[in-house]
Image (tube, rainbow, N blue to C red; front, top):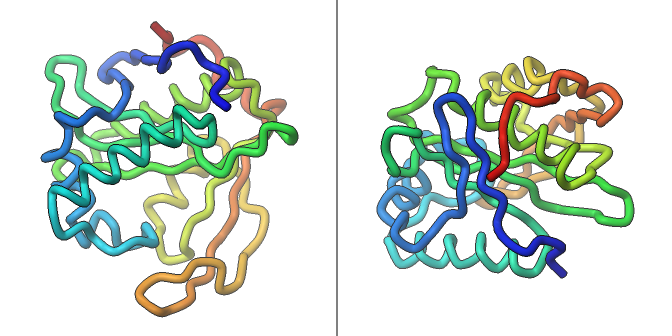
Length: 192
């Protein structure tokens, strides 16, 4: 069950993190149909905008059921969705979750995902009261492993054949960040 009266919108210096909405379908399709952007994601690229619409509905259902939250990432000066990020696999009793994210390839290497993740990590620890946030990443995804390490996550273990994609099994590293080690997530983003 959801513990929030409304979806938390978060603003950072360059970004606005808001719900993913039906009018984002073209941008969701552009990102989630890109094989390169989804190379390590664990799902097949979308083939139709209808599938993108269904993904948007799944994001909304996750929030309304209280099992996940997915923010749409938009640049402050425009309202075009450039990616998403959020938390899934919640264990409310254990106060832990997993981090997920992706960014349209046209916006890579600008620090946008780092900025967005810092904001939601702050919100996760302070607004949602998580104690532990994990990230599960394929070994060959060096960019993502570097990103979470920069954000303060620590590599814990290699999960052998943890992910199944395209009829193959893939090893995954698990990284974690604990609230007590997340001092850098103080007051940099504001929730509105």
